[in-house]
Image 1: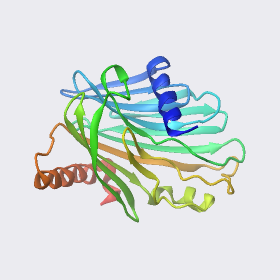
Image 2: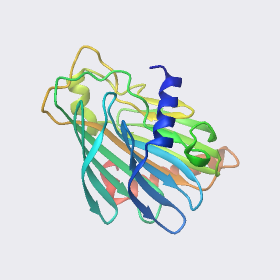
Image 3: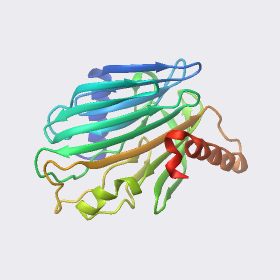
Image 4: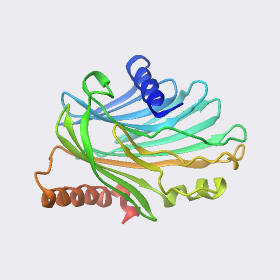
Amino acid sequence: MNKNGTLISTQQEILFDKKVIRTYPHQNFAYKVFSTTSSVWALLKNTSDNLLVLRAAFTPVGRLAVKESKILPHGLNLSAESAIGHFDIELRFDPKLPLVHAKTFLTPCLKYKITDWPKNLFPLGKNYDLFKATGSVTDKRLEARSGMLYAHLKRPHPASFLYLENFPSLAKFYKRTHTSPQESVGDTWPQLGYSPPSNSKHALSRSRKYPLYDSYLALTYEVPSDSVQSRHLFSQLLGQIQKSPEFSHLN
């Protein structure tokens, strides 16, 4: 499926196939976890608008079914089944700042090759519309330890956000599939974020547990007016990720 087809399919799922699992309201923002036919999502919103949605699990065939959840004070652990195997999903939400962590593992039920999976981060417009959110990507950084994406929303609500994928924790996946995370973080609006690198030759082994995602998303309602303020906001968002106890291993 091409990128436009993937985007349309994702839009249809989010619009018509949402099953809400849990909502975490806070003073001026909230998190919502929901599943669709192919995916598990973590949504970040302000008091009135949906802003960003982060994919925490994906299956390209069949239906992904959430079977079990363990609710925690600031997050939850999910267990899901699909035609390709079993997913373990860990979602954590900062109660003071709009900050999300999603870590996901796949235990395949067969030898499985990952090819052409979609990206995992989408800005949202009104009524969950992926085509109506406007904004721009300011910076993309691919380094040995992480892939980062720094961007700004204009509509439905002004905001800035930093996405970070932690590559070292996914080393077992890269080793088994003979892949590299370079160029795995996309910056083509609105299909942003990370997708596991494709490899049609080296399959994941059956019944072995592999890390798929280790994603971080931090947001502020500030929008920079110049390059100096933009650099300051980037450092501020990265610092929020690094200083949070949940993300301390990135320091």
